[in-house]
Length: 135
Image 1 (cartoon, rainbow, N blue to C red):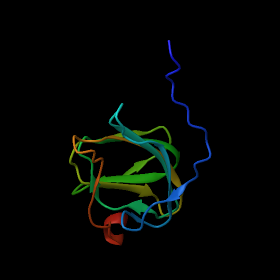
Image 2: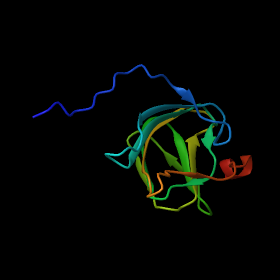
Image 3: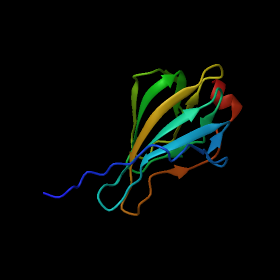
């Protein structure tokens, strides 16, 4: 049998979350991107206090696994929910939502999502307002 396991050494570095998709300082470490073998993508995302995503959706849904700190997640029209290390959140396909850190704490999570037939994993919408964040 051939040597088929893929192994990626650490050292790729953290990249800043783009300002059009995030409010505040966010750092993203890619774990894997969708490719010809799997439609699954994943990243370790670290939010500084008060940082958060913009509203967005995922065509195949998204799973968040909180690794550190205290954060929030919210569905459009819903209540802000606190998330803590070990929590797992599944967001249904097409649900508009945001997630990020509380105002006082850092928060990190692993985000896992699947690409659709067109290779898309996320549709970004408008930024979360300060009023929506503190609701």
